[in-house]
Length: 155
Image (cartoon, rainbow, N blue to C red):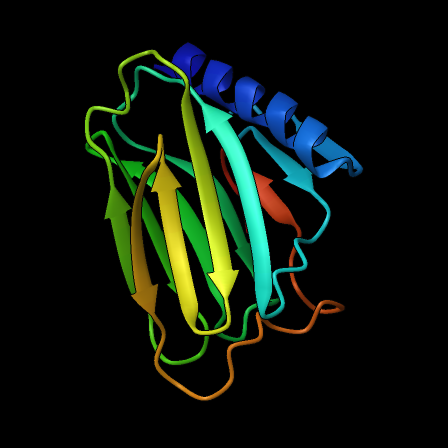
């Protein structure tokens, strides 16, 4: 299992480093390996794309937050389906797309924000949600966390 997760992180690491064109860190901690990229400026409108392949049904693909206040994006595989859990201040929302995504084939993912609308697309299949609240900015860029792929740093 550890090798498969490490392979998944490596593929995500390569694709994000190419698509985001940013500095990164690849932490090879035996207990909790992860990749760390500069902040995603999701603001009111932003798109993040990646591709992955794995044979594991569960695992964290991506995480970022506003520095610990309330905004966050968490992208996970849960029982072979892709789940985006996020909060833009009006309470946590969940979007789930796909099934059997742990089939060992490449899957293309897009997370897109447009004001109060957030969508998750996997291999061309899209689900969207509208956030509650009045303010839909994703944190403040200066205090937002970096983007973590495949895990997050230990506390």
